[in-house]
Image 1: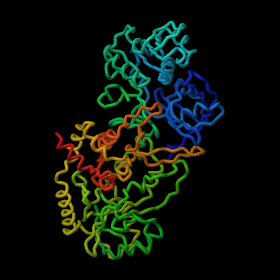
Image 2 (image 1 turned 30 degrees about the vertical axis):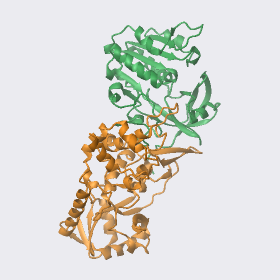
Image 3 (image 1 turned 90 degrees about the vertical axis):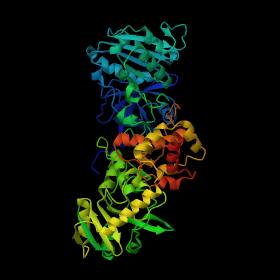
Image 4 (image 1 turned 30 degrees about the horizontal axis):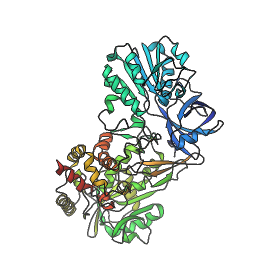
Length: 273
Length: 331
């Protein structure tokens, strides 16, 4: 067989693991072979002999010698990921999917709406956009978490908020005495934005319930269906458009997505499950 | 298309030398059902050309139940005799999935490249056969290297590809004659099969109508069938177009690709627990939507070729065709 084997992962060294929140850790990786990806694409990470699962990198797509992935402990493979200490070799396949069409965001105002571990792929998007920030009018970053302690990348926000082209707004469902920002659901932040929503592009990533109400709020504010980009969470296994686990109507989310515009998928039932 | 006429006994004789060079699989009839078996010099005479549809779908030759997809695969030269058109047409969907130029599956491609497929006409039908309802003929139309038609002591071979022609030439069959077209008696036998199928399936709507019927069904409709479905997945594993699989991890980053089915619980469940196909009724509907709406939409192919195996295989006695007719009559 002379073709590249699409099922075989390439080795990545796990340099270190950092705890972000009680359930979320960031894994710092170094590829041992040439590897690059576009923001919004995902990778399949194998723990040798244990299992494989899909994640979207959280580091900038412009950095190719290192990669960071932020993972919430949720199922069997992610629990095993959380047990890793650093020094291990992981297998990575990909990148897969289409990613964000950044050229369609150029010269526009962009809303980035995220919650929980959904902030991880958005960090990759924001960092990648920041490398060419002059191409965008303004980036409104609206992020939410359950409590201040649940926010991932705690050290990042002062730097992010100080960028003159970035308008950072954060909300927590439940504030504590230290919290100075919004208390309430993340969609409340959208009401605070002063923008021409009809020409704005919005990117949404987070838990299903947030995706649903975030999208409905954006539509209500006047954002066009074709300008709302959703990162769909599905049980992507092969990443190649073959195994069938991530079928969504006439699409395989792994190959045709995982980023879809709302108008591409709105007619399918159960998209928010 | 080139057509040859020859004597059946000369064909059988030529296979004697071929079995040493190729692994030849052909249908043998055992305990009343036909299925592909590895043919040896001793069993050449038992090959059942005029049998009913083989039990195993053709896909199993190219997409085996279970295989290691990281280890190197050998190149085995194979010949499959007696493939039916419902299975041949189904290969178009598998090719679209596994030979997708963005991600060519090297294991599938290796098997496709090294396998000569010899189709054969169907002159007898099962009570579950319904290919023609979906526009699939009861003789090889596509994805075959050679195709056989047969009448009494005579055989007729149509050449589908250069690979097929080279194989046929290598057999050195004595008395082989090129003819203009298939004789009338073969065309008559095919027409007879068509009529049997038309009569048997006269109530059954075609693909386009079925698509509209399925799209209109509600959950209550599928809940009725969910009462007898046991999620065994037989309908999927026996289906010539079902291609879903699992990747199972083994040490040294090896992976096992194993058949999976949307009828099994948790097929679409994500780590956080959400599962769009959690309800059995939704899994049932998903199978019909996949075959009549989504796969044709994705690949512009026929995703149910009317082989009827899912009807035979169902432990819950759910007949796909009766489901479709019931859905239509519900309107």
